[in-house]
Image 1 (cartoon, rainbow, N blue to C red):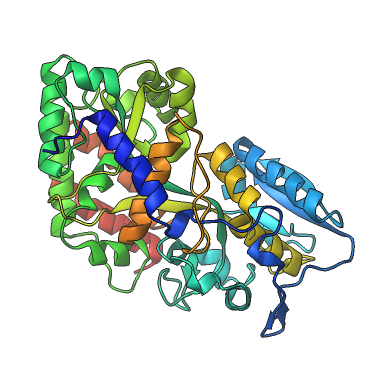
Image 2 (image 1 turned 60 degrees about the horizontal axis):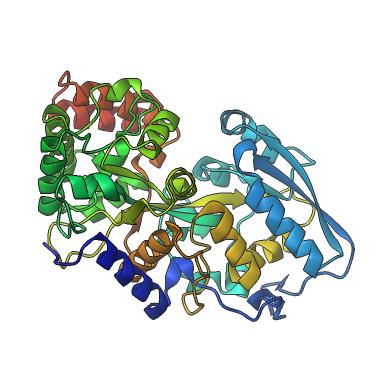
Length: 452
């Protein structure tokens, strides 16, 4: 185990942030002039912003409007000829109605849209390949962008055409309550999966809930995948996530991960009422001091800072050995340009500006808590001192350096999480389903949904 304490590890994270200039975090162009100001033309796509008056119509998710609207205001301040009009709806309604909205004659110019595969095949999204070539998006770190690349057969991943970009690129890891960890005798960040399990045992022995998680709405998938990401067979798991032909979830790593978290549940490492806790409640209970660890994403950092500033830390889930490359669920908050959008060129210019302009990148970090993405050779925005963003940005930088981003299990198909993966996780964690049966049930539902 590392001899560095919690505080020592966090200081190292700050050093990493200043020393490493990588990937999903980057950005440092002169304030007020992003890389998007350069004018070139590739395959009939210009990277010069129009001088005409333009109104971009944007369709947002109701609970996540602040970052986009702040970015839009900053963009209009710099480019007064471009203004924005907004509509919004809940995530559930977007999921239900997005296809109709995108395919309408008056489709928005930019829309929050999480699942691109079918819409790309249906031809209702703008293929962004020419914009990617013109702006250099193909030269950015591709770990998260591969999640929104779609091939001709509908599978996702490297080699497919690009159909979306993110406004914020999330990273998942392990939040910890410093006071409870120290009470349990846990004085350093675990550097291996074995050390992490030893810390769970210490937390349980100290009378604390080792891992706060709510599985009423299936967030048990986070610890499940956090374990599986560290095991052999990662390429096979990615193939399954990206719907590759003949891909299967019936992997040794799937059974091992399911067995591991079932054992954790049996040993009392999760709350007794884990299946009765929804995600929002689990975040609230952790913020109120229940649970030593929580496997979650950087989007929750602000909530924990608000509850107990300086009382929490964050680290990437450890691998099987100290030298293992880090692997973690990380995904863009995806936005698409419908194929019938009135002004796709201006929309693409705006999305490029979000990734390359210094002020825009800072806004993304400050409001979403997530990395802004963009070119690997640009410096990261500066997190506010004393906030969890110091840890989450450093973690995302490290993940980008290791090229360890992987999509979420629940994104393998539109219905897999709610139809099978989630409900059967509830059975798995209460010993009403074996790990082997859990894995085979997920694969059966996957094949059915994809018509295989």
